[in-house]
Amino acid sequence: MLYIQKKNEPEAVIKWKRKYKGTPPFETIPEKEKHLLRDSLLKEQGNICCYCCGRISANDSHIEHFHPKSKYPNLSLEYQNLFASCNGGSYKKHCGQYKDNNFDEKKLISPLEPDCADHFIFDEFGEILPADEEDIRAEYTIKILNLNAPRLKKAREEAYWAALEEDEDLRNPGSEARRQKLIQKFNTISEDGKQIPYRDLILYFLRKG
Ligand SMILES: [Zn+2]
Image (cartoon, rainbow, N blue to C red):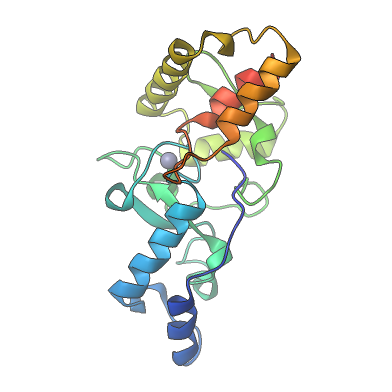
């Protein structure tokens, strides 16, 4: 998980909400505005999932309600409550669709928390673990989003080895300057606006040294 800096909600969505009397339920948003909303979220996140950091596009993602819309109808179109999440594969094995209505506000770590990434560590086999084994929020978040689903672990492991193959220095940057340069590389959004998938794991290994 990586910190998401929310930007502005699309103007057309704001306008449509203004016209609606009261709080509009999510289901009432017209297709055009819904697409604008989804595209805005995807762009904000550099086309990676809000929870697992896997690559997503408009065709294989959904608008995720951090506070589930069934329990918090007033937040169902609140921009701060919306993210773009992967679908967890055909069987909804992880992330937003897997989480569904499970939600404990006190425990679930949000990508809007600037230090959200610090709650987690990884191993070289793609497993995600709480950084502090007594961190009940990290443990809950991994469980409720199923962040150790086998397909996800495999994808992380592959991303790690692919990055290593591309840049041997990743494992041992040698100097602090080189390490910082690599961190900067993985923190930079490419020209097409896309972030590198699973860069939460790669940044973790780089920072760990
Ligand atoms: Zn995901």
